[in-house]
Image (cartoon, rainbow, N blue to C red):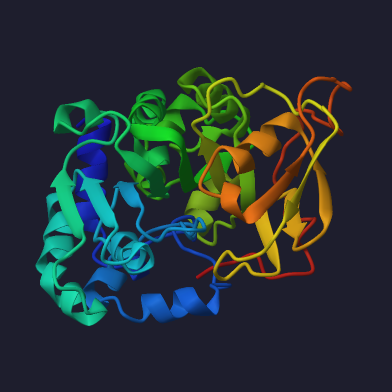
Length: 351
């Protein structure tokens, strides 16, 4: 049985609800913002029960956007995003598992009525996320591509990133949550169908992911949030406990000419406010939380991520690239995630 068939078997037949999971890798942390809690309460119980994500795909400014969800499963995130993009937006979910697609499609009209839309703004297609070129999707046709704990399950992660780059509009972004490891997972563990299905042994070593992203055309991946994962199953812990795993959300912008590191040109931005649910501060990534009205020095890449994307109208921009001042801050290659020791004073579990 190949990798895709094994994953389809696990998510289509072995797992019937999130309660069947053996670890907390494919579960979302509980600190969900209130407006998203409200939106999630509008989702059909059967769709919610078959959800196996590890994060919240919640980029800002979604009204009217065209969004592609890679590995959409039962459709929970698609129906969440449907409410956020509004009736004029559009959400397409792609998944390879027939049982999951059946759940998603069964409740299209239920959600349309629940949201008060005249027509549904959601669609689902059967397909493989590493073979999106076979679905006839137009190049550069999506504003945002999301994925929730699925890319780790793909046998060809580089193809997934390449296809995402091709389908994004200039200035668009790939915003996704997934599982990462602090080292490369040995081949014998990768071949284990349970460890793979539990989103562990298919996880990329984080630095391999960074290099794959750069080759795909995303030279400066930005970490938005992360948390260490615990493996509460003793049998699985015995086999894979020597590896540390993390749930992490990244945003990757499609901007030609971004530099591979944070270069200092003496530039700065001021957030003017106005972004819904982020009126007083806007988080570009884990290290860039911009308070309204405050001058914030940024590197050249951050400047462009704000000035050449949908975020531009909400910022004032200062400076140019005429003078280069060297590297911006401590731009290194250490493990970017917070370890369990760092978070010892908080509850790192999610389910």
